[in-house]
Image (cartoon, rainbow, N blue to C red; front, side, top):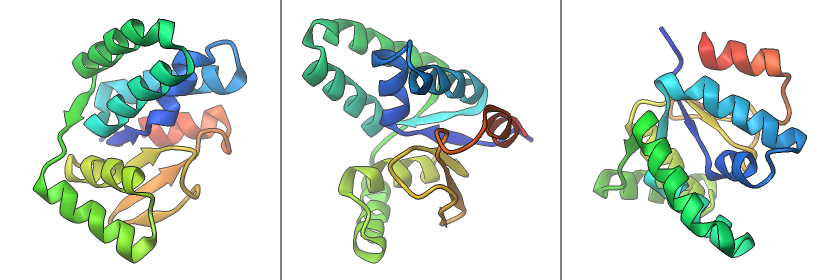
Length: 148
């Protein structure tokens, strides 16, 4: 059974804004591997648009189109009262940043068991979900973890 994974906004951002860099290429590879069975939190998509708008305003319309395209490929995890409660627990019990907690909680509520991000400690496991930092692991290891 494939791993159900979710991607943080930083993965989307690297793929879009730094496609020629090593991180951008790794991020694009992760997106391709995750797409068949992945889930994206609404928060991650909106953060993606906000960062592109701030860093490269001329690319805002393209970022909106890209977010819409990802929404057709990935399941989109909504933010609701249960996500609010879960995120609040993560903020108070584990000192997560608020928006990281929202993405974590939405992804977990949608059944993800892996969150791909560089913002949290690689290997951290909470609530049956594990963090994978794709920039601290080999491509082969990431592929094995995401396509198992």
